[in-house]
Image (cartoon, rainbow, N blue to C red; front, side):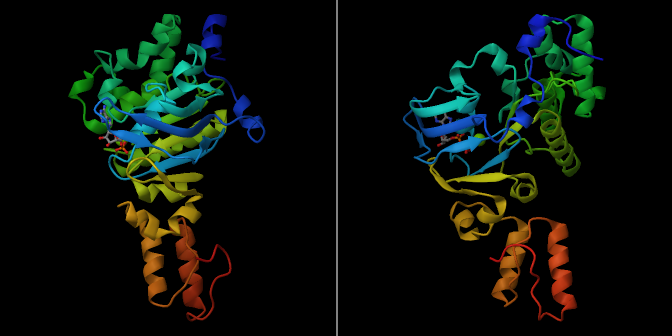
Length: 320
Ligand SMILES: Nc1ncnc2c1ncn2[C@@H]1O[C@H](COP(=O)(O)OP(=O)(O)O)[C@@H](O)[C@H]1O
Ligand SMILES: [Mg+2]
């Protein structure tokens, strides 16, 4: 049911789950190589020689202090900036030359959400892209309603976007970004989210993580996300890149690898996740336990340590 109505539209709309099955062998969804960009006022961002890749189904988080170059990186991936050196490839092509059909498979949330909200009402804004593709009114309505309900903002449909709170506007932009995801055949192959957790309350942050996971499970969606909200990262990310001021990639790896180097994060003015801080403080007090990435894992480690009278170190997890 709810299949796509016309071949034209099907061609232009996000692909089905092909990305999931082909994950290990196909080219990465995103590939950044030796990228550098200088803004007209002379501000340069240079990501150095380290390659950054995002594969199908992978969640990659970019961390870095203000002005490090996170948004500049993501704008290249979205094809809104053209590399002056190096490459930004998406779905195997230069990102700034992605054909419309592929571009429609990329869901984007800009840091400045107001730049992507263009409709006079929330409904008009979310319905814009499917309407623009020439879908039948009933399909436009079905997709827009589904996206608004999925983001929990159906009740805001008739509101004027600029009258909404910052968090609500972010949800409107997200609804627009995923409007083609019909929960069945079509979903984005890539989500590019610039500071998506900003201005979201804890429940909304959890809802967003659930939405991302749902899309990944259904469509193998690759996720490239920048955030300051470091506490959500260990549980959320598969791979973390840490940018130094000026864009250089100062560290990258799994959350366990990156967050076990708190000195690298602190040098970049990034507050390490609270569990990293706690277990590092314990280590300074002579209690050396593996670094947990989740509260549950931390509780297991501490409970097991306490039960053994503080003598036995748990053997699960990685030693720091
Ligand atoms: N439009 C612009 N014109 C000039 N400089 C810019 C512009 N946008 C960003 N910059 C500069 O480029 C650097 C990287 O910015 P940005 O990518 O927005 O960093 P982040 O997202 O990590 O905070 C900063 O020094 C910033 O001031
Ligand atoms: Mg930014």
